[in-house]
Image (cartoon, rainbow, N blue to C red; front, side, top):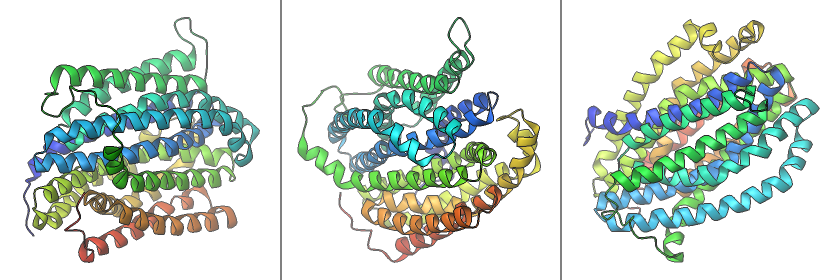
Length: 443
């Protein structure tokens, strides 16, 4: 097994991504922690509304992953002047998409939510959240392109600073708007949505100012605002369209999981939202190393060093387990302590513990599964990654529908869906990286 990067070098790149992802996750955790002290209906509704928003947002994130792969490849080749045009064409495209999705969401979201949510109370709360949350499209879509630039050029420390600013902003906005402090009206779940959107605006402002002041804009051709260039956008979309579809479909199936759970009752949905947020902590750790792995693989291929790819993947799996396993042990040994962050209702915490244990077991396979999957995307074979994901998601949704909707198994068993997903995505991606023809992919 040949390796180019030391564990220290991997950690140097990964830890700012890790901090930024954890901080981003804390926005959802903040919403849940505050709403968990408002009521079970608001807590459950924020799960459906939050994943609904996330499914749409992930299309933009998928586009940014494709742009990030191209930026990393150009960075590895030393073609720095091509990075700026990729960045700006991505901004133009995503702002246009944000406007279209905002209008469509305002028109159709009430009808969609009404037709798929059985509880009138959950519907009212979810609609109130979505009605304000969609304003965040304009800010979060720009934000992901900045993230693509900094990850693709391996300048990831900036993400840490940005995330700290965003989370602190979200805590302040949520506290003021949810509970009606400092003379503001008490907005409840709508306040959580407004607070999250405002924190994303703060994030974009930070990125713009930091890039202008601290980055060598001439090196990356960021100092020139180019005209719309269809050829550059087409090059990005050739990579990104598959990650956009993959991310949207992936989050849509997760949205369906929460809809299935909603039919088990408001208590089950509240538990699912708590576990979703607890899950986000180890998931962000895994995704930090998976994103680093994908970026480094793209840089390796750009430099013509394919021989280091398999060794790099194995390094990331080892370091991923090193960080995730202690977290899982903490969750299993002190579940009440962890769950108390999200709700002060003792009976709700007790009811959530079995689901937490099931989820922790799933991460034993989710660590290598996510790293291998991002490795496939890092090679530039995003169409293959989409095909693999669609196959696995078909298995996932069939399993979830049968055991949750048909057999109506309890909420703890419902979380075995994560293990099913992890096993199959790991198997498919491992076989592709072992036998697939990815070494000569040109992008």
